Amino acid sequence: MKTLFNFVALLLAFLNELPAVERAQFIVPPQVFIQHTPERSFIGAGMLMLENSDILMVAPWGRPPTNFEQIAAKFPVPMLYRSTDGGRTWNEQGRMQMEWNLAGLISDGGTSFLRLPDGRIAVVFNRHVKGRHGGGAPVIAFSADNGQTWTAAKVLIENDDAFYVMNDRLIQLRSGRLVLPVSRKVGKTEGDRDEGLSMLSDDAGVTWRLSRGTAGIDAPRGMQEPCVAELRDGRVLMMGRTGLGSHHVALSADGGETWSKPEVTALESACSSLTLKTLPDGRLIVFYNHATPIKAGAFFPRTPLCYAVSDDSGRTWSPPIIVDDEGVANKDRQNIYPSICFTKEGLVVMWSTHGADPQGSFKGQYDPNIGGGKRAIIGLTTTALPKNPNAQK
Image 1 (cartoon, rainbow, N blue to C red):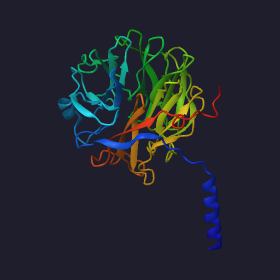
Image 2 (image 1 turned 180 degrees about the vertical axis):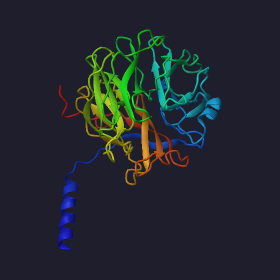
Image 3 (image 1 turned 90 degrees about the horizontal axis):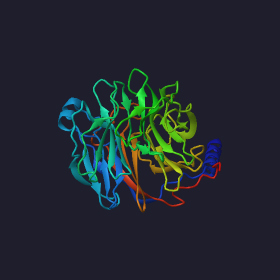
Image 4 (image 1 turned 45 degrees about the horizontal axis):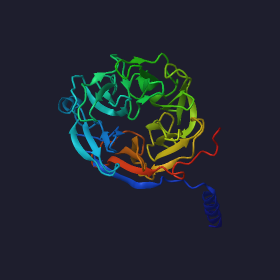
């Protein structure tokens, strides 16, 4: 008994010395605002703030337990939502007014919005095409009336390769070039091994081409679902998920044409979703699932949802700050595919919450009775977005 008492005392002393995990400072705390249904799983949302401060949001179809071809015939394009109160509440606006004459359907990869210099809005979608391992060349459309109507959906690059693009990915460099990071299947099945590369446009999205170089890792999962940000010195940083226990980064010094060999970061994670953004002050912020993988190459755990900040161009990162840790104790929840929208009061974060198998499989993740679309509003304060004390100036 005395030995047990001493062990507990030592354990408590050790835990008391551990640094406290900081939580996000919420203006509005996390809340499910759209429930999953038997036909529709909320995943891969994209958001855009309009000039009048309204926020547009689109979330494509997930992988429901129904036939994809049946859904494609009925619902090829997703619903459009609008918030007039800074992301607190959302009103359904009906399906996007967009002509769709393509194979497949807009699917669970995600949505990217971007306001172009001429005032138009560009939107890019992942496309699910049968037999292409969950992918299919991404599509683009444009709106000249703040999202009321859209041009016909158009494939960026006609190619038979299986490409996959996630939400909140499309950026425009200071040079004017549009960069869309995508992953291309190298392995035989979805999730086997991918390489990261970019689709590039130098004419405001009229024509596109693939980057000359790729960012690859000869390891389980490869370099999957990349996102990009332009650094202060003009280089482009690519960050992708891997099967090696952390997110990796590659750099481009030529506007996304070629990429360095991916390198490890301190962002510990399974092969799970991430979203990278540039803060108004030029620092980087990444939202991801900070957790130790259950094994090499694992896709789980996928909670908690955290963020970290870098003020040295991604060389080092602040400790993770928790946004949503639902399901951590029982390992039975996914908090994934965050989308970010900057507002006057802070930032709106939107993500998908699903069930999870504690053993690390995808079994039960589309249970319509569990989860849905979740959102929170985080304040842009010094405490909420700490500077990294270890940053190299």
